[in-house]
Length: 392
Ligand SMILES: Nc1nc2c(ncn2[C@@H]2O[C@H](COP(=O)(O)OP(=O)(O)OP(=O)(O)O)[C@@H](O)[C@H]2O)c(=O)[nH]1
Image 1 (cartoon, rainbow, N blue to C red):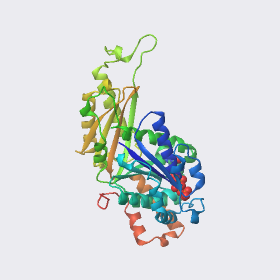
Image 2: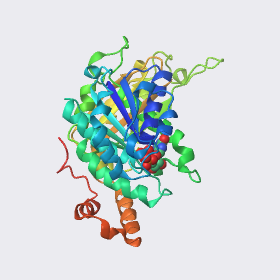
Image 3: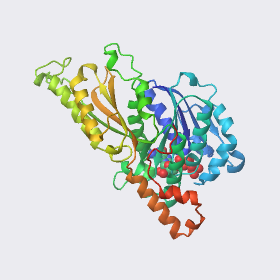
Image 4: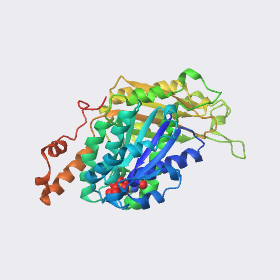
């Protein structure tokens, strides 16, 4: 699936930078173009892979190139003023070859949180392609204002994109680790998962059975219908011959080129269970998801049809959803088999509820809750995503 990436604010820019680095390192090819937009000049300078002419400062007159200090409304105003100029910076990217846009932002800060919905809206107005969001939720150790911004931005962004993928910093922090020190590691976890998903469908491996290979329309159809999505992923490293010639494949009575069917099947079904029950990019009750996509990656000879089918059935039971798509992502040069599951349209998200309670408590104790408008209070009161008011 071919994407144009837009990183807004510091987190957005760094994550997009990391996508480009990962694509280059792994010799993948699914990014049609990438831009970074920010109100802070210093953040743009720190990027390494986004081309310099695709790093755009905005709101310079008012923000003076120093960021917006977590003020989302200020950022949204600046983005409104400069939206056309920012979108024009995509002119030299072959957007017609892309399947979709991905707007990436940290939802706790000011620039990304405030500007991402404005830019998503502008993209939607101009292009006839899906616009997806990728939002990062703040960690518990971060200031109250981050929780407050995240809840507000979440409600706005989910209504302006065709689907909002979420990554929760808090879930991925190790105990004792500080979030700012962990950003690079977290970006690695996030980018690896999303790259497996989005790069699926871009395979040109001649050893593959064409009809079982996933294509971009299946990703688009899974994300269609809006709401929030989360991703699970698990992999197992395949046995290799050591100097004595021993390999697990031999143990199971087969050569490396033709793995034992039961072993190949078990690797896939085990990975599917771990991907579903292990840590998701955003923890949630997967039985609340409306659709799912199961991508099984690995060398073609390890992609057991039975294993893939059993996994799909198991996930169907686990999510209680009939709309489960699946397919192969054959990688001849891979040393592992992995299963990546996209759970789309999830509605039971305790983390959003926690952030909402924290933001409301902080606003009440500082007396600021009186300043919240009725609409904002409604937004806070309704943290569920039941799909009734989503963009279609
Ligand atoms: N995962 C991840 N989170 C990040 C990264 N950088 C910042 N964050 C998180 O994003 C939130 C802050 O958003 P930023 O992107 O720094 O803020 P901004 O959009 O640049 O807005 P201002 O700084 O207020 O102008 C916090 O929750 C941070 O923990 C990053 O590289 N990776």
